[in-house]
Image 1 (spheres, rainbow, N blue to C red):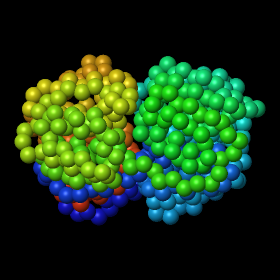
Image 2 (cartoon, helix red, strand yellow; image 1 turned 120 degrees about the horizontal axis):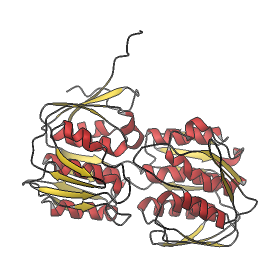
Image 3 (tube, rainbow, N blue to C red; image 1 turned 180 degrees about the vertical axis):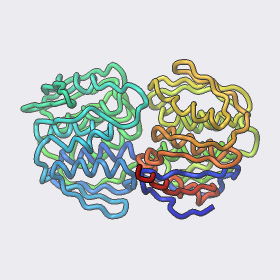
Length: 434
């Protein structure tokens, strides 16, 4: 198939996938979206420029860059590098149109409070995967001395000086932990965040902040201790590899019965997925910065439940459901974190998948052949699941709303095409004037 136009482009682009090919070869992972966005926000805390390298070329990074620009922050982009100079920061109210497009804009709350003493943000947007409440962000910041109030448009927070506090989270929240950690690095005194999120991107943010002069201990455990400092300085940081992207390629290799060498991976970030792939009958070999995943025999059905890290990542659940459609037998998938994560099931059924959903439980009856169909992508990770299913289906599968994939994956179609996928991207013709 024609491989022109495989990179990110028009919002109305669609993907065409001709299924039936095994994926074979080597694929490189880009920098982590979930680490890059809070690290871009963290630059606001510094007295000098922050250089981020291994930055993914994705739409969400561009959106965050536009938000920072609306705050007066100067930036210089070159390939996978970005220099962020916060010395022109002019207030705590970013452009609402840009900030409202992406839930990750919420990570500006903590750094803006610490840097300029106020933050006004719209209600979070982004993927509709269920309620993602911000009460814990608010309660933690209020313990540190901030005043937070709801407005008709969103939220507004102010403070004269943040103070250290002991914050016990009701449940581990990634964005909440990141927000509180960034607020605490410039607060007066010591902040303890108990029941903190332990995800790899939380750890990477702490490494980035420490390179800027912060004093953070315990990131990656459920107890993070932050000793506040007056100033942070210029620094350079390499964004951690994206373990969700790596996991997506690993699942795609297993689903198609192929074999991929996935480069630039921290295998410890993928422990649960790799365990499930082995249990399902795949061959998995781990190296210092790579993982090889292949399958030569029938795929076995294996149950799974999502859980906060180090449990199975919810961002890989949709891809795992797609994988289980290819397994021999019945598997049960529990979604413990978000109530709308099974939205791609309806689309998978269009391909012929036999999946039953009740509440937060999906039962996948594997082994039924998939046949190409027209599909609608509704969010980043369900889009990846539909691509994987399309690679396994007989005939042609088309996926609309490719912009969702662009938000989280750097040239997913192009990378898959290089390892044997028959996949192309083209623009949908504009509708005639009525």
